Length: 298
Image (cartoon, rainbow, N blue to C red):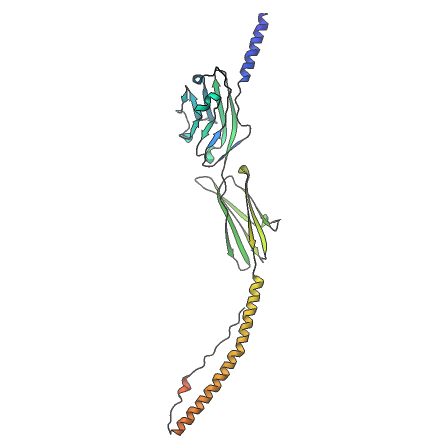
């Protein structure tokens, strides 16, 4: 009989122990670069809960992120990386909230975090992953004209992790015709992305640049419209050349008129000199008609 009672007591104690279970995220938590991040952790409380018997410890690997016991924060052993960046929700601790707030997160805050909670009702610890991501900036477009086409360069920065890029032309994938360069900032670790393409024999067409940052679900999709005025410029050149050719007979006619006028004036001058019995060098001998060249537009 005593054995049965002992077994029941042992079973009851085991069931009581298993009832104490903390709750943390099942999936990896994503934090936004330079913003605050809440690491959730909840524990069961009842009428017997006592703050003085509650111990809460947060760790990343072997590094102590934050500790709480004796009814207050105990940060003597806190890793220097987290100094003045962590806090608990002390006013919500009586409701079983052991969550940690981490301020101004950086890429170095990524890793596996463990929440440990011990109260007069039991103790338990659980771990989950944390990754950091950053949004990419609005893409900037630069272009330069080539002898046989155009060079397009799209740049975006301040993002993490490295994105997936895609180029489309009229809904056809031309990514394999592009070149992409990823560079990480030596201080922040964030990426600068540059992607460019050289296009020859450009015609009126539509290009689409796509940047996908999977952890944040960020999709940047920008369209680039290309317009070729090659045919218009050819038509304009032909028109201008046509005008140049029209100008040629006008110039010739003007030369003929001026020549006739020169001969007529010279003749009259000589006749006037003879009538006055004077011997005078022709004054108009120094007047030169410039040799004008017609320009041909190509």
